[in-house]
Length: 264
Image (cartoon, rainbow, N blue to C red; front, side):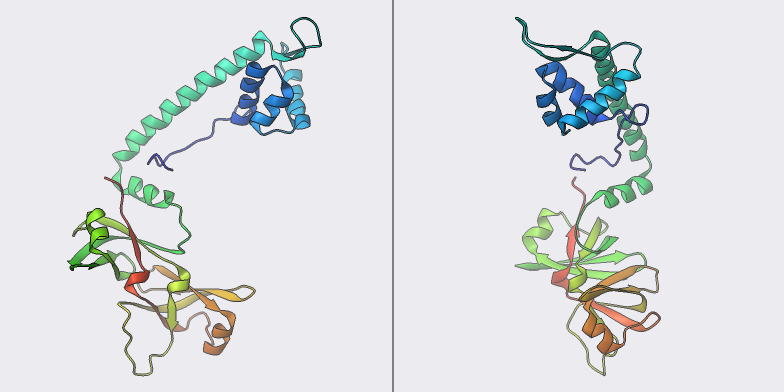
């Protein structure tokens, strides 16, 4: 939702008359041409006729009038009843928008719910999304390291340019969302005595293995209940014998973590 709202709703009358139907009526009123009105509202010519015929047949007064030739030219126009229906829809849209604004205002006074809905409204291809609170910010001359405390996942560290950290106004106590692509997550089942340089290492147990044509989505449930998803080739799944219940560690570098914060 680009305007920052978390509520939306589609107005529909009688279960079938929606915004597209009334866009057809409005375009018909403006052009007196069913063919042009249908194209403007996204209908086929036949589809427009069908929906208009159905509505007209169920109306006590005709919604349309068709003229052929003559001095004023032919065409299909709305009757007074059709314009009355269109005007009623436009007024209801305004009332509906006002209702949503009222509910948005009420929701803003419920911070926990509003925060969750706002986070859910962000659309991204990143499979792993974790909400948390900034616990530490280390600003260097060029790069910055930001650590996020995530309920159910522990701590996640992201690195970025110092300029980006300042632009996002990152500081201790700020809410943020960590985004990690599943392809950036490496699963380790046995460190064999080695230590890895990656800042983020989250231990858990495999809870899901969804095999695709060439890759599998492997879900790792952490002790706190959060789920980390890794994209793993099917060959790697077979080679490591990945199976539900098996302990593993999700490893990803700090530069693979993107942080998102709400606009102030």
